[in-house]
Image 1 (cartoon, one colour):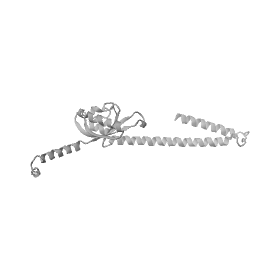
Image 2 (cartoon, one colour):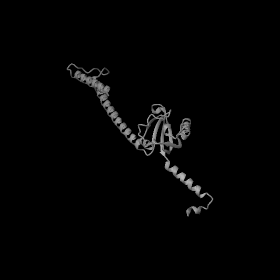
Image 3 (tube, helix red, strand yellow):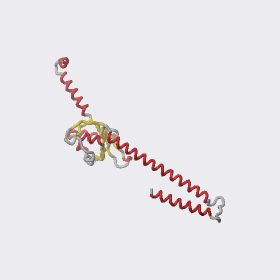
Image 4 (cartoon, helix red, strand yellow):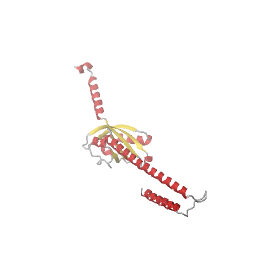
Length: 209
C-alpha cells in the first residue's frame, strides 16, 4: 500500500512537470515519431486511472474475502456436527464449538492435545485403521467408535475424515467431521434386547400381554 502511494506521488509529479514544460512559450511539438509529451501525458493519465481502478478492485476483493471468512467461521462454529483438524502426528490444530460441546470443554483447551486423548482406549485400533486406510486410498473414510468427555463419559460417534493436500497451503493434515450417534446406538441396543425377549422360546403374543 505504501508503494502505491509513493508511485502515485511520483506519477503526479511527473505529470505536473510535463504540463509546465508544455505551457512554456518556447515549447515546440516534436516531429512525428519522436518523443511526444502529449502522448506521454495521455498514457500517464490512463495509467493512473487504471491503477486507481485496480486498487479499488483489490480493496473490494479484500472486503469480500473478509466477509466470506467471517461467514465461514460462523457456519463452522455453529454447525450441528463437530469438526477437528489434526496434523499427521495426531495433534489437534483446530476444532469448532460444536465439538467443544460434545466433549464438555472449552475449545482452546483442546488445541495442541493429541486426538487419542479423547478416544476410548479400547477403540484406538479402530481409529488407527481409519487413518491408515485414508493414507492408502486418499479417499474419504468413515468409521464408528467411542469418544469420551472430560468427565470420562463415553459416547458413540461416526467419523468422516479426508486428507487435506499440501497444495491447500501448509503441510498435509486430516479434517474430520464428528457426528454423535449415541441415540441411534441406544435404539439399536433396545431393538436387539427386545428381539432377544421374543426369541426366548415363548410365543410372540405372550410379550403383548
